[in-house]
Image 1: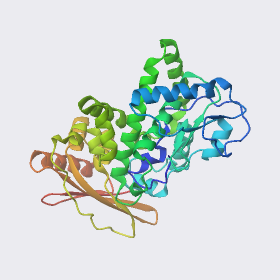
Image 2 (image 1 turned 90 degrees about the vertical axis):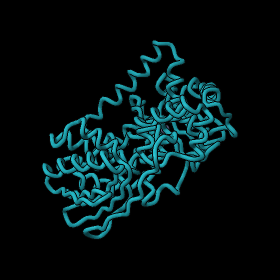
Image 3 (image 1 turned 120 degrees about the horizontal axis):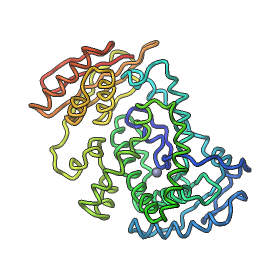
Image 4 (image 1 turned 30 degrees about the horizontal axis):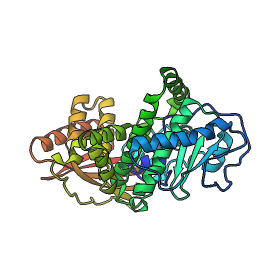
Length: 392
Ligand SMILES: [Zn+2]
């Protein structure tokens, strides 16, 4: 479900519902037959050995048994070789310019890095399978029924099942100001699919599990050119989502996971700290969007995840300690940002709230330490908010 996510928090949606755990080795170039209309059942392109198509019913049965839900209609599955998959998906849509501007504004990646190129590389290489909610079609990239390709098929079938029961295509989450909600929802969707995918992997003999990991590792080894902050952004739903869903399932069972699709988590803090979603903390503060210093490019919330990214960067530069960065990010209690651009410069102003008392003092101290060491970054303090302005 790649979407045209536009901001810091929506970025993870660019890869949402795609199995992002690496790509298999490219298959032999085949005919670009992907655009043909899928039939209601699994369709193998002429390049596919019958055994992969034959695995589809087995995979469906596995997903139904482990997810605890039955398919309401037969999912459509297209098994495509590398060339056909690229023809169908376009090889990834690249990063939105707004996201690039916001990463520049926060100085998360050196300006010398070509973020657009890095984003194209990360996206094109990471997508192995895809579920398209509009067409209700699963696309799997791989012509051989290797353990990893079967694992990916299980992942995407889980998305099809989620969509049939809960509707995972949520255009209402695409708009400005909805980005944290979109990120949290995609984390639920991916975390749930990875949970079932992991259970499939665990069901395989040790030899096949090892082979699946080797296939994945061989593909992901080429990601060295993707800056760490960009990788963290693009993969948030896949890295943080599973921990959230496991915590949810442990406390509330399968029914609790189902309920979360009906009343989803709303912030990255809910995902990073599942106890928040489970009702153990007070509601976050409502923070007004600060004034922009130029023509507005975007607004929303960076969330705990965005603050954590920023402070991780601050720790990497030596401006704050790792322990302070971690503790201050956990003190996040709400925020609102506005972004704007001027020729050659991108700026982002974020008003942050922490809980009154020690949390506020901690966040103030850590942000002050960062702004004292960083160029182009200032901090304004009010009674209940801390406003950081960063230009880069
Ligand atoms: Zn997925």
